[in-house]
Amino acid sequence: MGRTDDIINVAGHRLSTGAIEQVIASHPAVAECAVIGVADPLKGQRASGYVVLKAGVTAGEDELVRELIALVRKNIGPVADFKHATVVEALPKTRSGKILRKTMRQIADGEEYVVPSTIEDPDVIGQLLGVLRPKGAV
Image: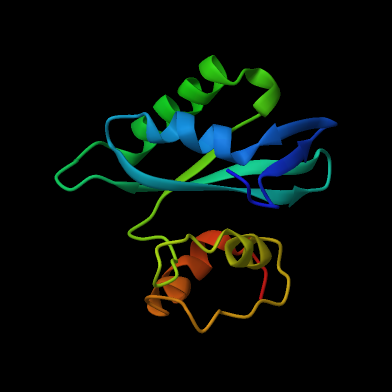
């Protein structure tokens, strides 16, 4: 919870991505998740969630996303403006198990990024490029 990128500014409200992650992780279908602050031209930043499902879960992605949005709205409040969650196969991690949130945010914001040499599986970044990059971005 002591990450430097743990606080995002959504329309003047300072929110903890770690707190949003805790709410999302409480859903019975979620194995692990990451929430990052993505640049938004109107609100400064917006929370964007990426979720890995538990083995054997066959829930429909649309229904699960609706449930996660409702869960965050109920527990954090509408001020979180959490409207975007995506189910992914895996999250990029270091060999010690830390999720590479900064790299994910840089990709989502269209910034230059460097994949750390400590990444566990470099292929995960390639799989997430289509999910993280804004439509039309290179």
